[in-house]
Figure 1: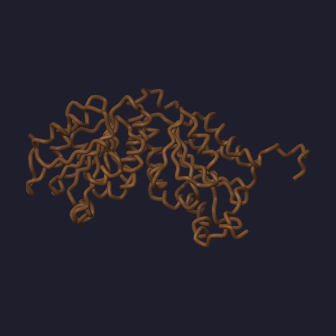
Figure 2: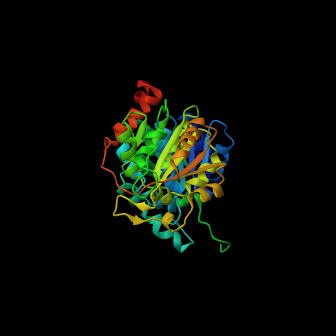
Figure 3: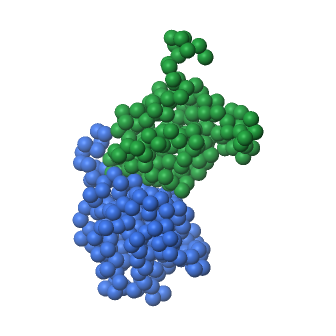
Length: 183
Length: 201
């Protein structure tokens, strides 16, 4: 990458988790529900360090869909962070977001869609978008670091402005494939 | 004193009526099926959220609400089958320790809405022990009418989270259906909590 290229935002390849954190603050996100993913680890650390955010580690991602429904009932804005495999765990619980018209922004780090090593990640990784869309979620992808902040911003805005589940999928092309020591 | 059903166990609707007596501004989430009919039979109101779906999610809705409104009491009333489906939530909730959240499982040891098939609690699975194992410091097992006032007092006292389980009579009672338009149910509770400004958020 040409470091002097004017169209390249310096450091975007590394600091996109911080840009997401800034957006969570901008949009007054008070509850962060998550099942950890390596791709989200830096963002999770930022949220844990923030006393105004209630960060809840879930045993399964569908708990987060229910939790954010409760948060909204009580006036808190929330966001759900997860890996693409976790989307499969959310399917039926997303029915609630529909019938209640609950804002439900999800930020999903992808596995299985670009250079994956682990065969078990392929099925869900390539079904993630279709599954979310089948449940009526507005899905946008970000496949370059520069795309992430505007896409997450749009995802959060569409959730809270139009009362529905929305998702940003952050491509494995950005995060990199875990190689289990077999580079 | 709360009546007993045919089996000699607690009458589910009488139990809910007793627990919700003088409830103040307590917010109540009811799991899908009979618990939703029970809270509606006691009296439908904006502070009730009867669920029509999302099986396994009732306790977690309670957690999100309790975290958002720490000064209000939140009670989740749900069935044994619903709690078992989302039993991992006991771990999630115990770690968060929301002082204003109580969970009451009405345990009839059956899936009442689908033909009375037996649940795991019929075969010895102990949800109170699972809640204790998850880290709930306060748990209650209620089997007799004379224990119900103590259950009500514990729920209303706060100092939770509280996990309570009442063994109830399995008889299915006449349906008392709440509104089933989810956007209405959500909006009315939001307005009860935040006033009309809720709709401008």
